Image: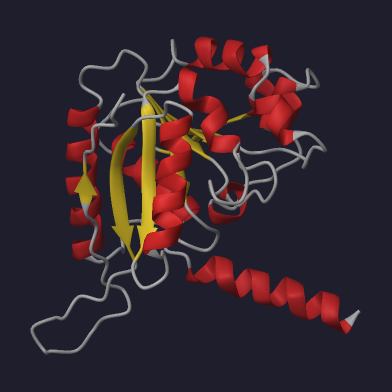
Length: 246
């Protein structure tokens, strides 16, 4: 029992450390996300889908937090945005946004509830959220199903942008199953954590499945302030577009 309680406590501490942007977020972070947003909008300018997959090479690289923050930043423009937690193996979005998770994406695809029943409306201004729902035994099969495709077809008529959080590519191939349904992938890279070998492996997997990388978001960078001291709340986000070879 003690080990179980300690594990729950440690998980809560990890979630608290993840920084979801709000009115009190330091200027350097909000401005960095705005810059990333501008580049993402340009990258999507020739696409008619405006559905973005977010992923990383490995776990614990800031993927889910970055997905939430990009969705919020897009919604801050006045655009109607939907955030979907498609990491049905280890869902995090509901924890970050303090939402209940009894009904979500897994329920929609398996026909247990409707999209309207699963949607959390106006979690932030202009931002709706569909959590992952109960963890299913077959997440890959659900994501590659016709019902997932039909759900996104319906949702893209209602939203200007759809941001989808997916599991790390080097762990499972779930993100790659959405290649034909989305505009492309935004790849989260964590400084001093994501290795070149892991990144190269992930990019090769994307190329093999004809995926498109829209850009890279580099997170958890220490930025020296005027005092010369490194702030734990300073982030440096790089957004780069990359054309995938045929």
